[in-house]
Image 1 (cartoon, one colour):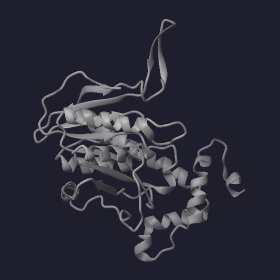
Image 2: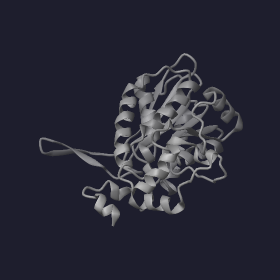
Image 3: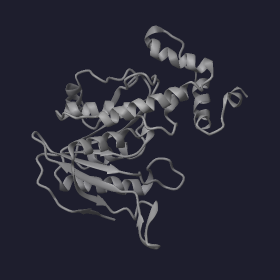
Image 4: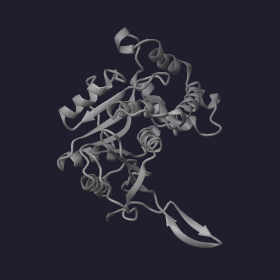
Length: 306
């Protein structure tokens, strides 16, 4: 199990920013947009065979030439202030039957990423993902920030200047960071590299829907842009956001009227602050059980009523 670097670039106090698939594809959309906007250079990748099954084959003239695997690639970009290294993994390694990265493969993957970060001299490691929250899809998502050191957390908070704050982080609930987004910064901290995870909010009723949620990716990317003083053109991400919100609205309109009314209170008033009627646990359970059904072809109002 190893990695291959095509070069070891001379970098100025770089940070590593990581994106993997997850709920709403929040992290991978944010980091891949950053990579494309900065026109980052390819640096190398982690060997896929120990972690993944092939996801396709390459055939030319009737001859199978090679197997395709999910990629786990490093990129870098030299910048005026400090340089950036980006890691984009097309898939998280998971044990059989697990939705998120877990077990020995995930731990080995995290350590390999940190190996490269140390080889390239990275000072911090940032991961990004989704925070499932009681928000409306017309909200601008806030960003939850969890860091391994208070000084890094304070630095991030100073740079974002009160913008993209979440109303739900720290409201007396205990949360965890699933998959490699949390594991990686934990492994990095044990090896002396401070880290943080930036989690863009995704509405709870869309968390299991097979949709990207670029609104949350945009919020995460805005925090990163401020932290590194970057000027990015996110028009492609903005267009994807517009299209996804149209799909989210169509999906939302399939809910029973009583559920729609309760969710809509989020857009009209802050439920907790105004004393509005919050969504009950039964309502949340109904949504969780029917998310996948709502996207299945042929599922209609008659089915819902039944």
